[in-house]
Image (cartoon, rainbow, N blue to C red):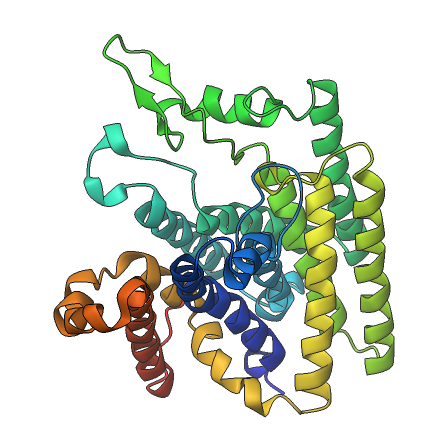
Length: 373
């Protein structure tokens, strides 16, 4: 079979599930929970599952971004294996990877970096999931092309070791004082999210913003590499039974490593600690295994195929949800319902917004129009 036609349907569907939760289910459920109140059953579920942990700990919502990075890695062996074998043109490879990294960076800057302000004073350089994917993807591609699978696994283990060693030697994990945040502040300066320049020219960093990007790129890369290694297993000539055995071992081992590390390093998604990386990667591997078995092996996932509308246009779905402002349109058509639905009116507007995004994605899917980066 021509390699370019080899595609994991389970990967498209799992990616679709991730995007569906991110740009459809969570925002609508959030408005629903707000309407019922934070002490209601919906409010309690939302707070315990669909919000980010403030510092230490892990919620379901904290798995969304790592799974996105993981799946970016899983696709690498399928997309670039011919270059690893030396069959593709180097110039074509460089253009393909560079374009993807640049576009992801630009899209991330549009979503959360104020790029469209056209004002350098309000620009944030490294602030978004897409930019984390761009950097993790770039370094993972380089390592994948240069290293054997065994050495790639060593690199996957070495990156979190370097990360954790540096954090422990440089003072630990205190918000605002850890080395990861200090590196961001030193390098990004007023280009760091939430930073302002005072009238005296001094950079003032927001006391509520404690997310790391530059130092955490080591573990962004490790997260993508966990997907690369999973993709290598799935693409191999091993038997299905052998693939599943190794993925179960990898997933469970990753969770056990996360538990072990958590005794010396807290699980902090905002810093992308090594314990968090192993925990989320373990969940991602096991999720990928389940979807692969049900959809690609057993062929029993027909009822999930609608998720491909999101999964095969994931970047477009992400960009549309965060940049397509339909507030005026939705309010114009739906404002008459406000007196009927009361506190559920914000949920109705949010539902209308996600349905508009869905409609665009559905038309694109039917017309085979995909935003490829």
